Length: 369
Image (cartoon, rainbow, N blue to C red; front, side, top):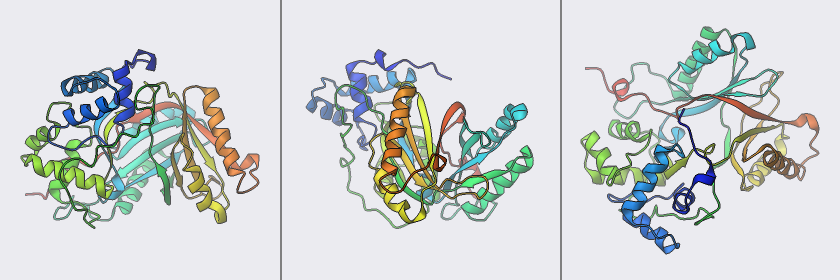
């Protein structure tokens, strides 16, 4: 794992980049000069080449997880789901190795819980228009197939916790420094595009997602370089990424920080048994708490998992994390009498796998000759 530096090692320009471009980076053929112009208007003296060099340096130092587009798996015709399981302590490493061996497993964490100590995200993709992966079936059926295979390989039961409703997804990790509100949005630059109603993507569009899902090249012309790899016009790449952004197939384009490098080391998944009749109100209110990076409604599993609401918080130390969890609890008490047994916090103790959500490789989705 890349060694990262603390936030104290970041320059004023570094902090400006992290704050300004966690979303809303321009999708134009030559993006660095308009991005630098926007920073200069915010009091940050930087040229386009200097901004490019700063982003490249942050990436090389491990301060960024990547630079580019954050793809929304559900909106490109697939699905992503959270799965919990018990890995016996004496076999924990072997179970983790088996689970991590599945390419459909994106993130996997060891979490503090007396029984469900392994939590992973499973992502599968639907077939693109005009292509076949040779397996058939819907994305949900593929999830069931993969989980059945994991259970057979590990001998452990899995508990699928698919998202029932997304109240908020918008993790931003801001620092003291310029553009401290993180409100710089240049996504309006570039060509006008018209969103489509399609819930699936074409083979060419899927090739594009495969090319950019691990990040854009940090070069003078990132979109042109992607176009060259795909043998497509630069204009098509720019227009497609911008359209995906409008359609929600891409959540945002910009820098994706490594929050551990920024000092956000405490990762707490708070879980709640919220009465069903107030769940929507609770979700909408908790979603407005600025430090909550994700919150969802997910199903209970009778006798094993009583919680139906998840809210993820991050803190710079244990004390800050505990304060934020307490703020979530206080918010909950506005809606019902929260008992001690109605909630829990599962802190992550170890990252077992973190590759990001990926589509299958292009060779696996093209029709067989």
